[in-house]
Image 1: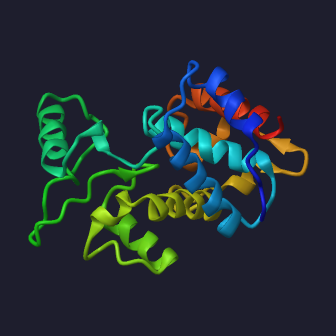
Image 2 (image 1 turned 90 degrees about the horizontal axis):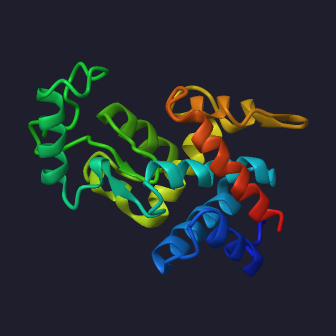
Image 3 (image 1 turned 135 degrees about the vertical axis):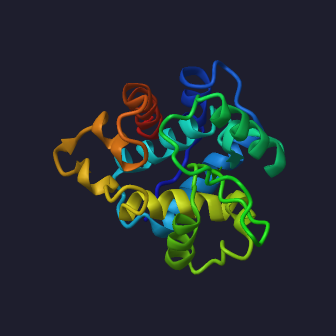
Length: 204
């Protein structure tokens, strides 16, 4: 695939999504995701790319760089924050604290452009990408690997069983339900709005 990014694209995003200021870190993140898309996306449907970028924007709280769960600066800080939230009953959907270190000292907390959690999901992405995320799960924080996890995971439905092509194909464009690719309908309308802004920028 080849989706080139023009200066008009960044100008549009700067004004419509980033409040007038776009950092080099955010530009680098966008470029990494688009580069991954051009290598691995298998379609030039800009709606799919826009939704992938919107997902990364939402999952990283606008930072558009790989982050740890809770936006922590270290694994230990993330684990401590998650433990506190769990013990206070603020994570009712969690039955097993997946972030706690295993016998090998590895934590399977959320990392990346999209929060990859649980050892089994790290294994799925390791197999899909040919990258060993089990020996060193922190590699999910590397820019290129994180971008590939986002693109391949959304392309092939590796996060939830639902994929980009289920929602954007031909005349079909279901911006709201596409959220099911990653996280049910959590903040679905918000992510859909971001995606439509990004699509307009790609078309600028």
